Image (cartoon, rainbow, N blue to C red; front, side, top):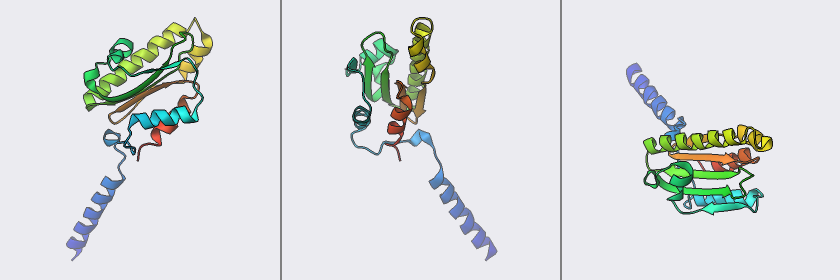
Length: 161
């Protein structure tokens, strides 16, 4: 009887441990609209510069970030076109984990390039970039370059269960 009870307890603990794990590699969006819904929420909740332009052509991912569109399942990108303000909103869903890791590396390189360009040119933009980062949540990689980056990140994370 004690063995049966021990087996049942072990099985229950295993199920409980699996149910409570926070494995970001299986992160999935709660919205059927995907990244488009997150971008719309960001636009609705944060006042963006009039100079923000939408990048909708996946081939531009290679031009701006060095990211091959074959690695991308879905994406939403907006960037400031003024040349002065460095604001960018980049959210990408990769096709697999290797692609997500590569995308993360490419976006980190973009962020570092921007920091290096702004360091002695526009100190206020450099200070803003210093507070920003590239994050990965499973197959989703995002980079919010903005004074409102923390709010954008909070909006992004609210779409995951």
